[in-house]
Image 1: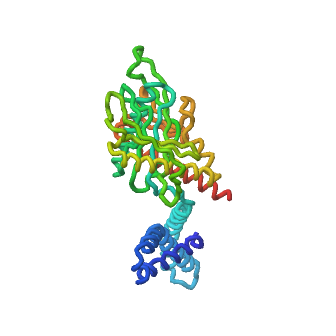
Image 2: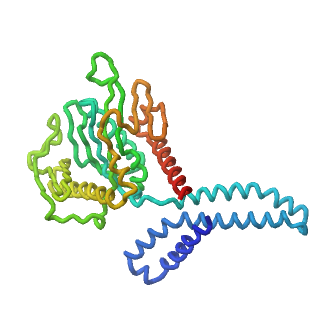
Image 3: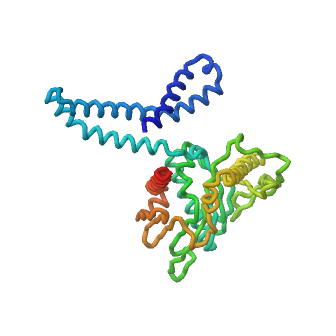
Length: 359
């Protein structure tokens, strides 16, 4: 493990020297780039130093314990410290193994969140609204900024679909496991017989593309303006401020109507389009992830699901890892998703470790 960390530690020390040189300090762009690289390597450098120190301490104690010429009291003392040093070394090696796992290059990006009603009619639309509010609460707890880009409301207050951007730190790393079909089991407000219905909606989490990652030719765009509309007269404008953009080569269509300004709606729609096109690029360029990303959402059918929210039993079950929590109210109303998301991330790490062990 030290051999794998050593080159990274050397690079960290090299960066420290570069960041104090007048040449780099006078170049703000290079300074920013190198500072970002240094920040990413800092935890690994610290891990290397601690691992190196514990390895040396263990080797030193073993040498003393096995040397008959040493003072008997020193040998006993050295022997007594060996078990704790071995335990610490094993823990550090496991930590290093996790730290060296391949990182998803999108993990630190902002996201575009899409939620769409699937099977279940009005009840599916109401659940779509519930899910969005759950993610909204979770984002607030994390200090993230969430902004609605497009929304299609129903007369009963549900959403046929809603699209939002979320900005903050390390968002895609936390939210990427939310993609898929979410199923709800409950008695709908419109049900007169008290029967439990099963409905579903789909969630897609798209990493937001940087300008340098997606090249959009203005010639390839068809841009339409129209008047914003919403259920019950909400979000209605008297001018054609809503924007719909069609990317002709791919057929991707995005729209934004949440702002009264056509310019603001256009800027948000372009950001949404870039994220959609980046997702297509990711599918074609990363073969290993293509199958995962294509199956990310599913059809929205009740039989396809990554998670079930059962209201009569007050439980939430994530079927991918077999995790069931009887805290549905806290999860839905307060956005207490941390336990589920952390468990999914841990499972993902375990699978990566298995793949590395087989390689």
